[in-house]
Image (cartoon, rainbow, N blue to C red; front, side, top):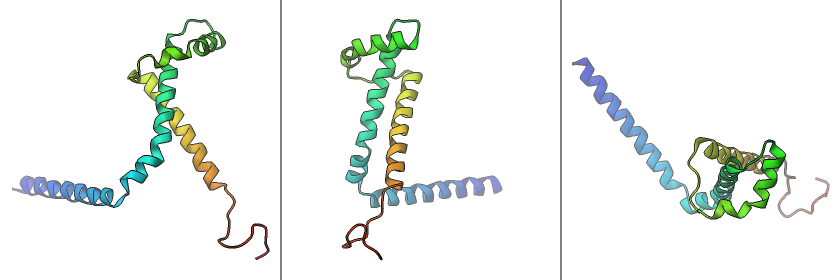
Length: 123
C-alpha cells in the first residue's frame, strides 16, 4: 500500500513541476528568446562545419591542416546539414559558449549611463 502512495505522490510531483515549467515558458516572450539566441546558433553551425572540414583535411601539423582548411573553405558548405559526430558537435558547442561568454563579459563591463544626464557629469 505504501509503495502505491509513493508512486502517486511522485506522479503528482512531476505533474506539478511540468505545469510550473509550462507556465514559466508561456510567460517568456518566445520571439525575443529566439532572436537573442540566433547569433549563437549561427556560430555553432559555422564552428561545427569548420570542425568537420578540419577533420577531413590532410596534413601532419596544425599549420598544414589550417592552410588546407582555408583553401577549401567552400567545401564545408557544399552539404548544408551540420555534422553529427561528437567531436564536431562539441567544437560547435564550445565555439558558441565562448562567444556567449564574450558577449556576457562585454555587457557586464559596460559603462553605466544615467538616464537623461550627460556622460561625465558630476553627480
